[in-house]
Image (cartoon, rainbow, N blue to C red; front, side, top):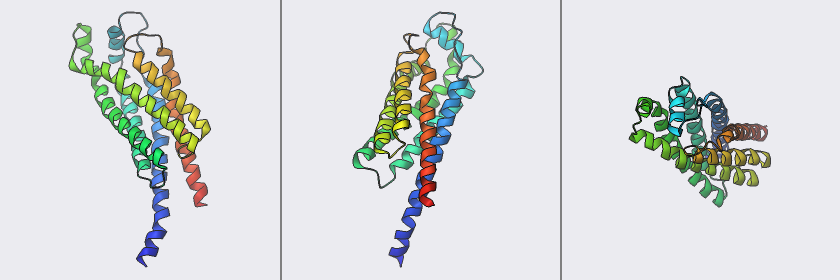
Length: 223
């Protein structure tokens, strides 16, 4: 009797886990898109990169936009961790999911610290440098690009195998992840690739689309 009960409950548990991950992806994708729309811009009046950063740090939208960004990355991270617990992933996909989830956890912690970079606006204005400003630079040029590349890789693998989205979402995640990686890796040194930031919002579209597809798959399977 206990064996029968266990076997009967397993599919229900799998559907519940998948639905949770799908909702996290959908909400995380929407939040990422909104965070990008809210993100403050510099004054576009020239100046050094630190002066441009100061313009953004003192903008009233700094905290709202980055709280939303933090929620977005945290939700996407939670979704990846839930998906990783699935027992039906192919071995290569499971290993990739482990790596991407670990990078996403790091990106979540980095975004939390990045949120408080605005507290250093006065130091920048007076020409000083602090540990938090240094961390901000490292986060932008290393952690964020790494996360973008990880999302791009996951989108390709998930879309190709149809374990996470499809070949259409593959393109969204690939373009969004690569442009996010390139724009963040170079933002501390040049304005050349700043125009890619709006394109990188495709990460949010990818996550929301994958979440929606997975929810529809679960609904169709249940019916």
